[in-house]
Length: 276
Image 1 (cartoon, rainbow, N blue to C red):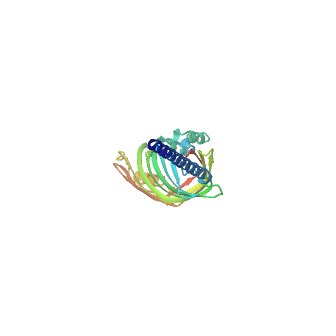
Image 2 (cartoon, rainbow, N blue to C red):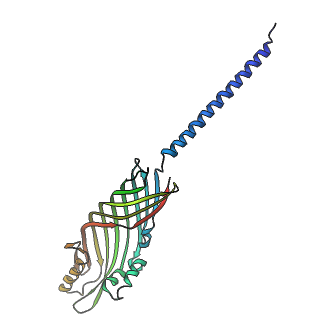
């Protein structure tokens, strides 16, 4: 019996095509299974490694604070924060107005606040150590942070000389501070994507330095009046027995150095963000 060479070649070609298709199908199925297995493993063991947040509570004092957090391990993260406060008259803040309403309009502290403008920036680096059995950046945490901040202050100081004449001394100050501290809080992850962060107690301590000056015609002041003005200015910034400001008064105005501890509190802060 003779074999047809053409039929033989067609049969071989058919088997080759079927083999290639079966191999491709098997490879595709294996790749699909691997992808699905990887997704299942990520869903089982995975959790968002990053989140970005905005501090809503700081908006009450005209501060715009943003944070970005990255997990370094299962329950340890590092975050960086940026805070900006545009030039603001403190007396115009709603929270200050509510406090001021409890005092008489002529109260010295209230009048001083109404004559003060502030702007500044702050940069924060923070390690967080989370507790709890749930994986990721959620649960109670203890934060170890460092902060660097710069401030500009404008203050219209009113001085009454020995002749009972009032003078305006427009002080302008530039201050910078750095320090470190601790903070405790709690963070929640809702629907795998919404991040809620609440911290209720924290504080830092470090070093503060800066300068102040006021360009003003003080030629009408006597030597005693100049000394009295210096005493008033130096007493503006006192914490305990520590004097922050050491001023010099001349006929052309005021200059001074600011040095002291950089101490601050962080409390009752609430942030919301997106985890990914």
